[in-house]
Length: 78
Image (cartoon, rainbow, N blue to C red; front, side):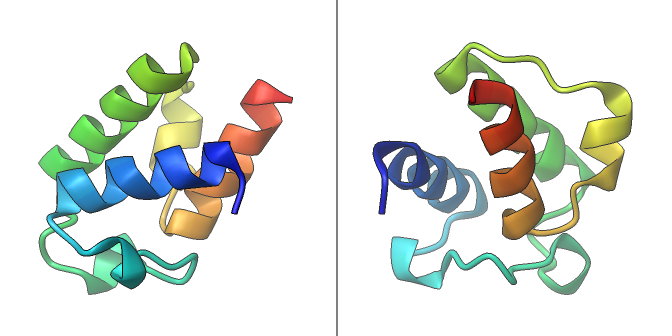
C-alpha cells in the first residue's frame, strides 16, 4: 500500500468511524448508512486538505465508492 493509499484509508476510517481493515474499494456510500451526504462532504474536505487538491462538484457527485475516491485522487495528484 502506498503512502497515498494509507493516508486515504486513514481519512476514510476516521470520518466514517471504521477500522482501517474495513475500508475497501468496494465500500459504497449508498450501502453504508453512516456515509451520508454530510459525511461525504466532510470526507471530501478532509481529502482536499490532506492532499492540497480541489474536487469539482461533478466529481464529488460521481464518487460512490472508496475505489472511486482512489481513482479521482490518483488523477489529481499524478
